[in-house]
Image 1 (cartoon, rainbow, N blue to C red):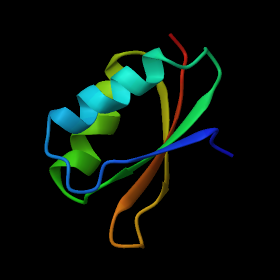
Image 2 (cartoon, one colour):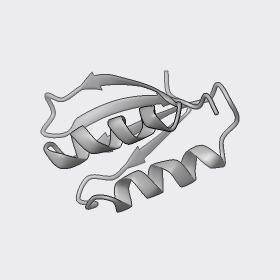
Image 3 (cartoon, rainbow, N blue to C red):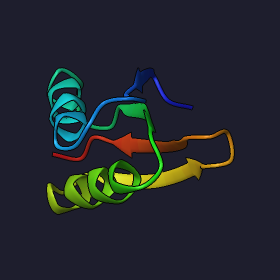
Image 4 (cartoon, rainbow, N blue to C red):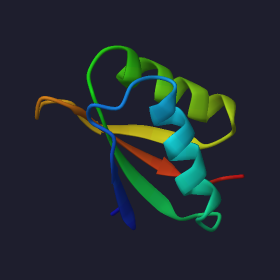
Length: 75
């Protein structure tokens, strides 16, 4: 279960990635963050960018009209 939830629906790229990264920087290694993203470019780009940063990312679901991902801070 995620410790925090970050609702970024309606936030455009790349600002949604930047906001996610800033939130992760305030968290300790091993903590989990659930992020809500719009379908399309945010759903594709944010997880990809976070993985490139070394974070662990998994899709929780995308059936509610938006995508939910979980990020475990690794670095």
